Length: 178
Image 1 (cartoon, rainbow, N blue to C red):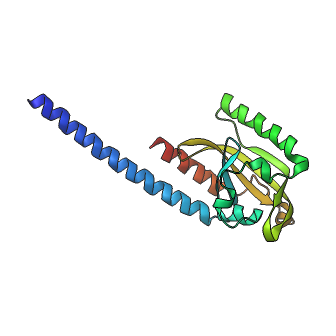
Image 2: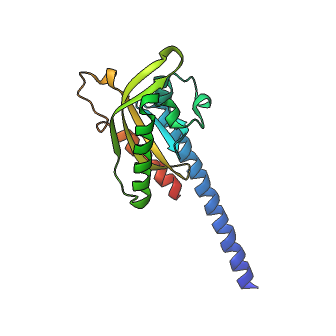
Image 3: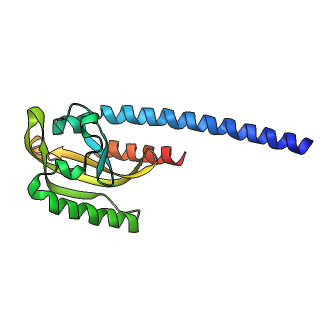
């Protein structure tokens, strides 16, 4: 009947559109990953406090060779021992604020001490900015860190120059909605 044919044609059209959207989503995610890995800003994505992504600048700053070394490692494990309780509480408070009020702005941590490994073994003093984002369809926190020793005399702060990570966050949200 004509009705059966119409429904089949509509289903076929929707499947084709879905296939196109999935392909576009894949391409956008690939481009996002290329952009993030190429930026000079050290950024990572944390899901429930666990590293799910870190770009090359982030890995290098902390002394890791590749993401396999850092994947699924709790962020708190790279925080210096003396600061862990304080940072853990700040993260928990911030995550609660984000859950209650999703439009919560970025959290600025002006003093954070991270431990680095390998050739850069030691304690690294950084500034960090956290903000809620969607990464691969999951709610995450994006963290951007800047080495304070490299910032000396530049008049730079974590809140400045975040255009790129903000772009990436918007791109992630767009991809998640696609």
